[in-house]
Structure formats: structure tokens, C-alpha cells
Amino acid sequence: MSTSGSALRIAVFPGSFDPVTVGHVSIVQRALPLFDKIYVAIGENNSKRHMFPLEKRLDWLRLTFKDMPKVEATSYQGLTADLCIKLGATFIVRGLRNSTDHAQERSIALMNHALRGVETMFLPALPEHAHISSTIVRELMANKADVSAFVPSAVGLP
Ligand code: ADP
Image (cartoon, rainbow, N blue to C red; front, side):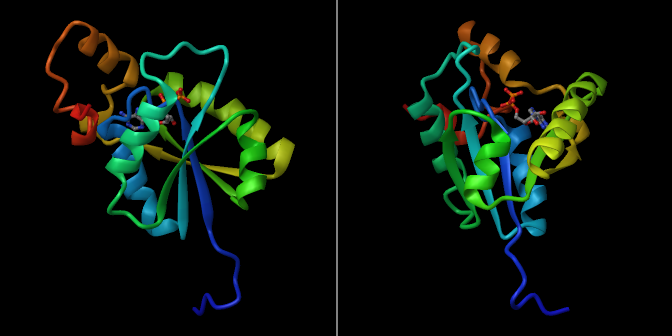
């Protein structure tokens, strides 16, 4: 089937990425064949406290995805659905680790659809990544544990 003349498939993968983990990277890698462009977008959510400053988290994303030309790291304020409209994205990508993720993500996905007609595509976390969260990685880092198995190598850089 020819794709000439058809709209580009653009997706947004939103999150805090505080810090980016190998679980996030896996979701992007698996979503790549489905899209022409994926924006990995850090939401600047005022109500969330972060361990790492926005610029650091963005640097880590840019370094991590530097060899994937279809991937671009960015940040945004406001609603993810509004970012999608701004970027021409018709899909949101999210990863699901467990039933808690599913319950939360389902209502957010339905709201984004109701607000802006944006569809959310879920990918299940691979079994080897299902236990990895930025929250746990932060806890490990705060206690000076070795996190190299859970984060891309860029996260070790100053
Ligand atoms: P948020 O603050 O929005 O929860 P995160 O940065 O924690 O953002 O996660 C962004 C997305 O990545 C979410 O869809 C989350 O479910 C997914 N995700 C997080 N960790 C993993 C993992 N280990 N495997 C697969 N998906 C993950």
C-alpha cells in the first residue's frame, strides 16, 4: 500500500522521565515501527516534585535517543491533548506495567479522546521491565545503589 499523500503518523510519549529508564526506552523502541515521528515529551506538571531538573531530564532523553532520527525529546506545560494538537500528533503512546497503571491510564486515555479526539496506544511492559519505575530508581539513587541495569547509559553522565 502506498503511503504517498497520506498524513504522517505522529505520536507523543508523555511522562516525567525523572529519570528515563530502560522501561521507557523499550516502549519507544517498540513503538518506532508504527510511527513516522515520536515526541518523547516531559510534562512540566506543577503539582509533581522532581528529583532531577527539567534540563537534565531533557539532556538524558536527547542523548538516549540520539541515534533514533524519528525520536525527538521536548517538554511542555498544560494538557497533553493540547500538545498533540500543537505537534500534529494523533496518537499518545503509554506503557502499562500492571493493573494499577491500566486503571489510571484508561480514564486519562478516554478523556484525551473526548477532549481532542486523540487515541492512546498502550504497549505492555516487557516482563523484564515490569518492576522498573522512575520512583524506585530515584529511591535507589538516593541511597547510592547501582542503577546501571535500570537506566540508559546517558543517565550516568554528569
Ligand atoms: P508519569 O509521571 O506520567 O507516570 P513516567 O515517566 O513515570 O510518567 O512514565 C511515562 C510512561 O512510561 C507511562 O506510560 C508509564 O506507564 C510508562 N512506563 C514507566 N515505566 C515503565 C516500564 N518499566 N516499562 C514500560 N513502561 C513504563
